Amino acid sequence: MSKDVSAREPEQLRKLFIGGLSFETTDESLRAHFEQWGTLTDCVVMRDTGSKRSRGFGFVTYSTVEEVDAGMDARPHKVDGRMVEPKRAVSREDSNKPGAHVTVKKIFVGGIKEDTEEAQLRDYFSQFGKIDLVEIMTDRNTGKRRGFAFVTFDDHDSVDRIVIQKYHTVNCHNCEVRKALSKQEMQNTGMSYGGGGYGGGGGGNRGYGGGQGYGNQGGGGGGGYGGNGYDGYNNGNGNGNYGGGGNGYNDFGNYNNQSSNYGPMKGTNFGGRNSGPYGGGYGGSTGGGGGGGYGGGGGGGGSGRRF
Image (tube, rainbow, N blue to C red; front, side, top):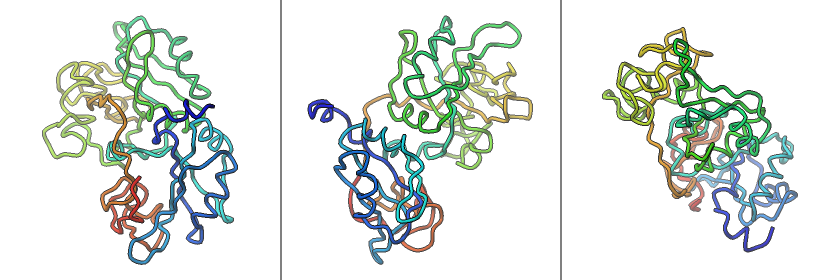
C-alpha cells in the first residue's frame, strides 16, 4: 500500500488495544512483538501517573489498516510469556456507548429497505469476515419485513471492524449497524430496558429500551426494537422486545432508539484522562490507577499521553 493511501486511513482504524499485559511488559517488548506484522507508528504501555506501574494494557498503532488486519489474523498473541487480548481500539467518542467494549459476534442492521434480500446482506458484510447466519426479521402475523436484520459472524473482530467503520450501504441504502447485545450483556453494561434511556434515569432519553422506536419510528409501549416500529423481535407487540420478557428471541434484551451518530470519527484520546474510555486497570488487575477494568472510569489518568 502506498504512503499516499496509508496517509488517508484514519489513525483510529490503525490502532489496536492490547489487554491482559504482564506488569513486566515494556513499550519495547510490546513493540518487538507486534512489529512482526507491520510498521508501528506508535506503541505504549499505559502506566499510572504516580507509581508508573503498568495498568495492564496498552496500544499499538500500525502504518496501515492492512497491517492491523494481519496482526489480528495472527491471533492468539503471547507477549512476555502471557496471552494477551488484542482488539480494535474504540474511540473516545464511542467508548461510553452501551456495549462499546463488549465482545460479540452478531450485529443488528437497521433501516434496511423492504426489498433487501439475504444475498445482498451476505454480499456486503462478507468483506468483513466469514458469516455464519443472516436473519431478516418479519412480522410473524403478516409476514411483512420489518426493516432490520441480524448478521452473525464466526469472529468478533468482524463485528469490531464493522462498528468502527460507521458508514454502511446495503442495497443502495444507508443502514444503521450496531452490536447485537444479549439481555444479560445489556444488564452488565448498565443499559436500561422498558423505561429510561441508556446513561440516564427515567424518562426514556433515546435509550435502548426507552419509550420510542428505533430511529424514532413507532410509539412507546416499552418497545423492543422500537415500540411499535421495530416492535418486539419475534413478538409483534409492545411488551415482547427482542428477547425481553421471556418470550423473545435468544434471551436478547431491548434495542431501542439510540441516535445514529453518523459522522466522522473524532475524539481519539485514550487513557490520558480519569474518565477516558480505558480509564481503569484492565481486567481488574491490581495496582496502578485501576478501579474499573477495561472501559471503566478509574483513576490514575494513564501515562499522560493522548490517544
